[in-house]
Length: 222
Length: 77
Image 1 (cartoon, rainbow over the protein chains, first blue to last red):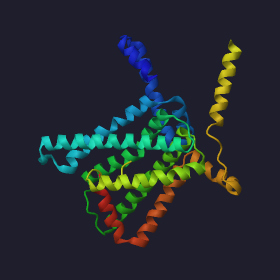
Image 2: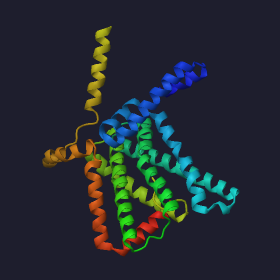
Image 3: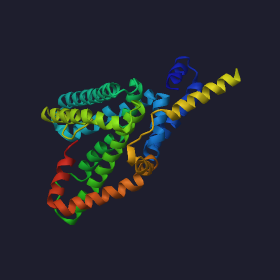
Image 4: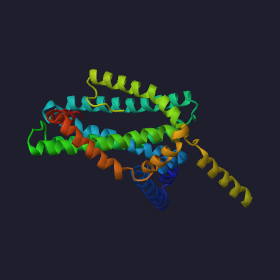
């Protein structure tokens, strides 16, 4: 469908372009709602239909987030040149991390006898960035509205409890999408997913530690 | 021609349903099948309340350290 939109645009067929674009939007919105409401069925459908253009649209969130977070993190007084460099560095590191994660999941899945479907992994792993970026966007907005440090007053404790509950919910959503990526994109059984996780999770921890030491990411982003 | 198309669509659907292979974990398979239903549709219905309960438990166990953790997380972007 995504390629059809590009063809319609090239042939300057406005009506066809509008129809295909609307269908794309409806399908995309349906998938976004689906990974929240019915993650199992939706992820199976995303892999079967190879929604890599929708994955590409989700990956466009990365520079949008970096555009918002860079001036908040360093302040506008840091100078436009420094902010530009920080923006480019952060965006490139994030894309590198994403593609490294996709390749690692693909190769580990293949090693455990899974299907050789990189596009499936690519499509599904992009949807798993939604809980990640929900958390990061919320954190940035909260930093602007209620900057840290949190106090030990009743308000401080209440916000802390709410924030931790919110973070745990999004983490569980991410874990569910991680499991479904290995299940549907790599076609692994539960036992093979458990074995693959013995390779994937330590690799993720080591990478997170490295990026923390390099000053790239403070919170593990995979 | 129409029968071939219907047959190919049926085979495609059968392949879609059959893959990936069903999960089997020995004697725990029936328990697994009962639990996994809650993950397949609207998992947030029980995940969000459970997250709140865990968060409250963290508060009662760690108290001030919870506030320090949130301060650290808020600077983590």
